[in-house]
Length: 120
Image 1 (cartoon, rainbow, N blue to C red):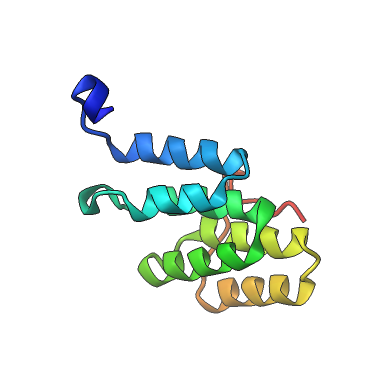
Image 2: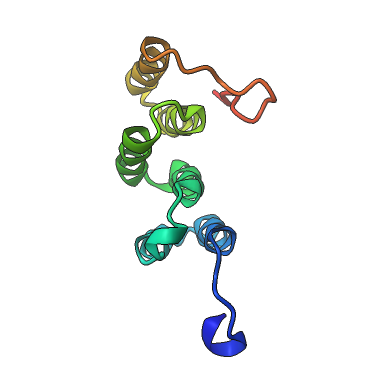
């Protein structure tokens, strides 16, 4: 965008790109986008999109991103829910239970608007 149109990318544009790449099963490329974001645009939003994409394809990468999000935003219910869903989708019910236990221990509540509801 900068070269073609002279526009500076904002966090929302990066997040859209990460979401598109994730939906296309291009998780490694999405990780590169997040890692190459300018520091002033790194606000954690894209990490959630990345975690959501990883839920579908790779629990290992999702786990790494989950811990990064929790380290910076321990009250992020979305991170717990997405990680729980990743474990459930891969049949790792013990790990799923651990995520739920950690949510309870840290007093994190699922979003009331339905956005944070568990699928499993």
